[in-house]
Image 1 (cartoon, rainbow, N blue to C red):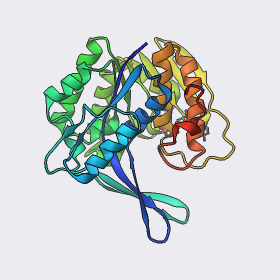
Image 2 (image 1 turned 90 degrees about the vertical axis):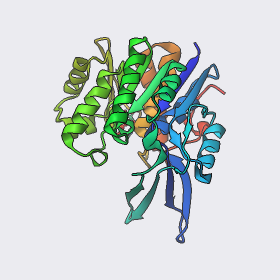
Image 3 (image 1 turned 120 degrees about the vertical axis):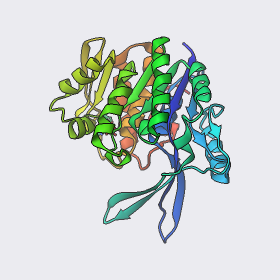
Image 4 (image 1 turned 30 degrees about the horizontal axis):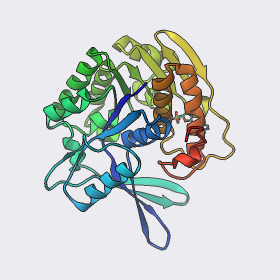
Length: 306
Ligand code: ADP
C-alpha cells in the first residue's frame, strides 16, 4: 500500500539545559513527534507530511530543514510574513522537569487561517492526524474551519485520527475544552486517547467508559493507551488488550504516547491488523521511554526494515 500521511499541528523550538548555563536547541511538538515516528516506521512507498504554519525568520527555515532531513514533507507548510515559531524551555530542578512556553503568538496559531490551503493539504492526503493540542492553539473560528475540513475528509472515506492530548492550560474554560475535544472525536474515525488524561479531565472511571464515550460520539475505532499498564483497542466493536513491553529502566516518558501513535499507524496502514500494530507500537514506545528526549533516532528503535 502507498499513500500520504498528513499530521497537522504545531512544532516548537525546544530549549533544554546543556550544563554550564548553556542551552541546547531542538524541535518538538506532539503532532510532529507522531509524524517523526510514522516516518521512521513506514515504508518508502508512504510519504509523511507535516501541515503547520511557520514564519519567514531564520528559525522557521531551520525547522523546515530539520523536517526535510527527517524525511518529512514540507510542501504543505504555510509561511507567514513577520511570524516566528513558538518556543518552550525545559528547566531542571532537583531532578524534576518543568516547562515554560512562549507560544501565544506563534505562527502555528494561524495554521487554519487559510481554509483553501488546509482543504488542499487534506485533499492531497490519505490519512489525516491531528490532536487536542492542534485544536487548543486555534481561535474558535479557525478550530471550526479545521473541524469542518476533517469532517469532510472522514465523509470522503479517509482515515481521520485524533489524539485528544488534553492540556487544560491551553484552553480558556473546561466547557470549551470538553466541547471541542468531543467535536474532534466526532470528526474522526480513530481516537487514540491516554487513559490518565481521560480519567483526570472527563472523569472516566474505567477504560471501558472512555471507549464507550468516544464510540458514542461516532468514532468507529478507539485505542486507549495506559502507560506501563498497556493499551486497549476497540476496532468496530472488537476489543483487544495489548500489554506494554517490560522496560528495565524508564529514562524519559516524553512522547511515549506520540511514538506509540506514529508506530501504530505506520503498521496499521500497511497491514490493517490493529492488534499486531499495537504490539509493534508498544515495542517502539518501550525503546522511546528508555532514552532521553522526544525524538529518538530510527537506528535506536530496533526496527527490522532498512
Ligand atoms: P502518553 O505519553 O500519551 O501519556 P502513555 O503514558 O499511555 O501515553 O504511554 C503510551 C504507550 O507507551 C503505552 O501504551 C506503552 O506501550 C508505552 N509506555 C509508556 N510508559 C511505559 C513504561 N513505563 N513501560 C513500558 N511501556 C511504556
